Image (cartoon, rainbow, N blue to C red):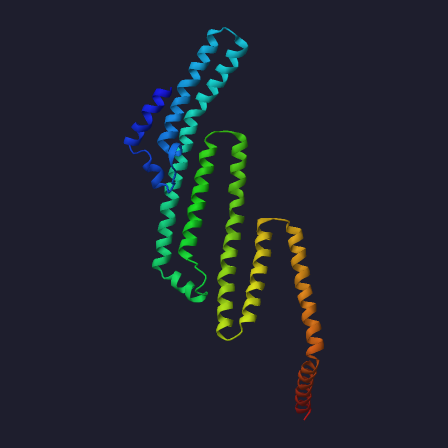
Length: 273
């Protein structure tokens, strides 16, 4: 088994098997390379049957029977494992290509320049790169789940189903964060140009706070607590605004209401005439 392992590693290197990892964007070194992993699998496949045969020679059924049963299970899973690995590798390659295509399409449409003009230059945000990375991650996750489902293990299948079911909420949360970032940065930049840096920072914080509440609600993380906290925060702001306007803007409110009352009175007198 050891000799086969030592011979297969350079053989797989000559066959350029490791280039599959490079195409998938996976950078590894040493034994983590695909050639080393495949050679180790062959090592195990040779070693385990030899161990079982050695135990079988002892004629101790209490030891050999469970070992043979386990070996049959392992060999039954090996084809599924290979198929699952192939699906995952294909998913990584496909996700990378699809993400790159989307990135190029958005960049060529000029959306990166438009978004960059809205936000401050200190924020290195690329809409094309962000979207391409998100799509790449989604495609890879779908292929990984399908690759795991090939193993036909109920626990892993349930986990994969839960992950796929949770994906729309995660994507919505990511979209909300992106919109809040762009909107908050655009508002901050616009107010800063007009000499209102303090108000710009305040508006940005408000937008980000609302976005965080929306994200937590979308992800279902303590939804009732988040909703209650948001309602209390809005109510507190409304009360604070009412008190501030009532105390500090009392004269302004009086003049406004007086002017409105005078206008209504003049209108009524004209109608009577």
